[in-house]
Image (cartoon, rainbow, N blue to C red; front, side, top):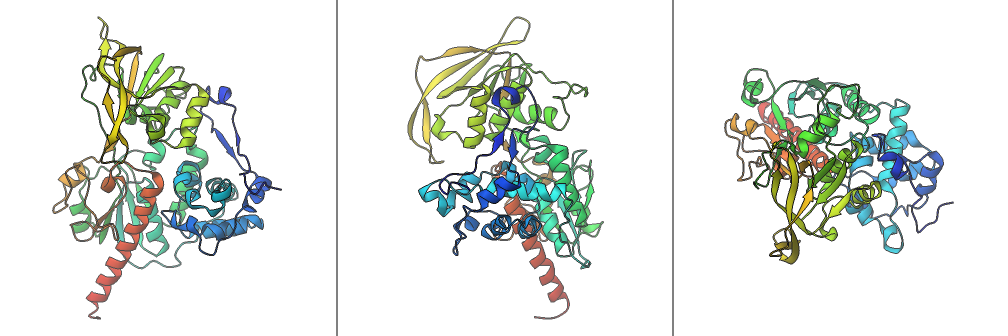
Length: 470
């Protein structure tokens, strides 16, 4: 029987073993463990956990089914709100969302909602439980740009309502950041992502890959020439940011996007693939978010000694606590309150070190975190041969620059109504990182749901107006 105050522990690969492979770190619950953890749920009538979930899953209802051993029913409950539960159960920051609002957490540890969601979703994948789709089509065509979490969620929700949905993906494989950005050891591609994509296809969603909107075709052409009545832009934020410091253009300096794309999507970690990647013997990763942790832990598995360089303290690290904990366990070294000043190269043009300066925290800035301030005269060198910049990303301006009447802000993000996803161009909706800048998978999914609802209301309203009804 579970200790009511503590989570049922989740089995993981040993840190020393997993640091040498790309197999999934967390092994998840089995049936007995999941049912045991489910007994800890208080089944609150006013469930704060639902308020904390960006896609509003009925968490007490699905956990109640798990408690009774009705896993297929639990999946149906989750499926009403989420198209990607096996993914969310692995990569969502539950500690700051659903679990962060769990009443059980006031006098003990919150219910392990994420791990229970993962268990239910994995059970559905293993037993090929089908999602519930629309019985008939409604005759409306919708285009979705981007097959990441925002696009997939929007497409899935619309398909459930009977829409004829086509997803256009720029890369050769659908999945967006789920396939190119998140490492195999956190999110297995064949076991999880590919199967979740199949569930979306089973709803009737069509996918066209190698289509770069703004080059292969444009949004205007999709609407004017190909009969799409509405478009959802979920193209993400894939344009990496750099610091602009001396030496940043040297060989051996990567953006985290490129480094992770080579490893994840192009399988550079697998010796049977020919994808080139500079593994490096000593690697510095600049940044403190989840992407920085992913890049650092990938470099570690490729054989490097890895240093995280982050200009604030551990308390301000934006990465999930679980990811920081795993990185430390595996041997990543954290150089906190430290900021790069320049990247040094030897006479052959190879990186020899990065010069950093110590920082101290001053008054809070606009983000609410204390502003890092340089300590004069505290520079020193860290010997490295590879540097990975994980400083965030912004949307690629290609779509906005090739679409008439589509408004963007100063950060090149598309401007969209937060309640409907409607942009400045009629019939065009947007959500996720293309609107907010880089954020989490689950927030992008929430935006995809908003966009699907907005499109449905727009097209049904248009249909009503067209019939002359008021």
